[in-house]
Image (cartoon, rainbow, N blue to C red):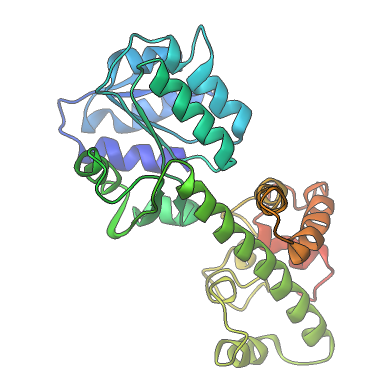
Amino acid sequence: MGYPMASHIRKKIPPATPLYLFDLNTAACERFATEHQSHGPVLVAESAKDVAERASTILSIVTASPHVRAVYLDERKGVIAAPPSGDRLMLECSTIDFETAREIGNALAEAGRGTYVDTPVSGGVPGAAAGNLSFLVGAAPDAPFRKRLDAVVAMMGSPEKVFYLGGLGNGLGAKISNNYIAGVVNLCTAEALNFAIRAGIDKHDLVKVIKASTGSTFMLDKVCPVPGVDPAAPSSRDYEGGFKMFMMPKDIGLAVDMAEKLGARPTTGKAALALYREAAEDPKIREKDASSVYRFLGGPE
């Protein structure tokens, strides 16, 4: 996700403006710098602290809450170790629990290190590559930094897909809710297509019927799990590309945890989480798109 997002930024900011990168995978940073040098300077930093000392606008997108804590709160190499700056704007694009985002944002504000805003993205790798991501912003519509934030995210998404949701953490709350729906529906779709095709219904006819009926969903329309039905779907590329299976337990787990902490009952989510945990351990599909749960279930291909 971060690679194509950074690519859009480098291509759209002024050619003389430097772009600073930091990632534990330094080889990826060096490759990015080589591939984008014609668009302007790309400088590989040694730490998040190094980035914060040089840039006034920071975007981060990493895997999980512990990584986000390290980026921002590590006392030696994190952003908090950089000099104070009221002008620093930090956009958190990672999908983590909303409580951690609020804790990090408050800690950075108290330390005078700038404004931290949760801005999780939706659209996956295809959306990042196309530059049409959605941004779910944990800030009020009249936030004083809105104009500046809008200008940054417009490089990676369209204005009509930027949603201001109130306060710190609310962007992540909305993202987790959306991911819960997508993950459960992805599994439900795979299960339904599996048993219907086993019953002898042609896979192409079946998908046409569902798309024209009440079972139609975004997941079936864009991520059909049955190979050979939609040439654009990961399933027709041996499930390559898209949202990797090993990430699904994390996202569904975040939603289940959030629901339980707030006194809600995530009944379907618990069942989906158990199945995704099994699937994520299967070496044949662990690195594949999450729609490969259809293959894990033994669906006819």
